[in-house]
Image (cartoon, rainbow, N blue to C red; front, side, top):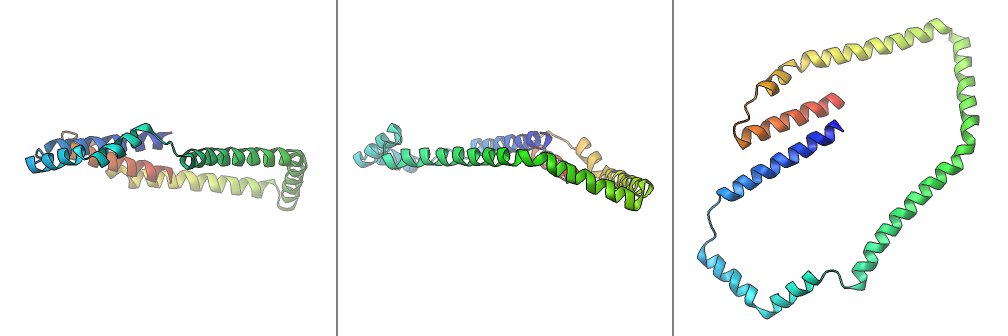
Length: 169
């Protein structure tokens, strides 16, 4: 959810900077405006605009969109059916898992299993601590970055997005 929010923020900042740039550009020249008005007065162009405003009237377009939705619904139904077909096997698979776990515990002992779990927990905590130490400079830069201009806000948003993506990875 956090990544989705950061991605939305990034897109919004990018759109805002694009809008600022579009406003800063010069007005269109009279020649371009004259050419546009001439093109819009063409009857063929007007017929095309009217057809596009009317929407998808061709049966091929309607059938294609209905076919795409029907295909997705069929895929969902097939997935639900496969899950339903697999449900009766769940108790047998869980029994097999627990019997394998019990045999591993009997073969190696509880101490070695707990040692492995403790080693992986320590490794995970150590890697997290290493990440926080390595990224302290970036985090401080992100916190201290100025947000006065659109370019600075975009730079900060990209840095935050990159930091968030590296945090998840």
